[in-house]
Length: 87
Image 1 (tube, rainbow, N blue to C red):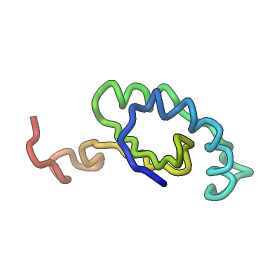
Image 2 (tube, rainbow, N blue to C red):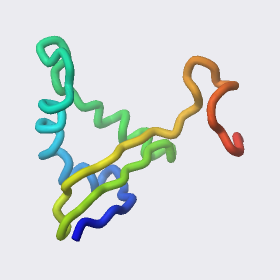
Image 3 (tube, helix red, strand yellow):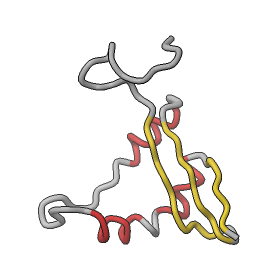
């Protein structure tokens, strides 16, 4: 059975490191110009700031899929975007 759950980045990363190269190989464009280079520090900082969402798919505890998203203000115009209750 496949289950979906929200997980902390740090826990997800333990299993995901093995999947990143295959994911990059399948989806990346211009591989000759843009090598696989994960910015782990940015992901960790985003998690610490409460701006990172990691949803995993697991089958019998084995990571089989994932979604990583960021919750940020609209970068071109901070007054624009989809904020429900800005601080």
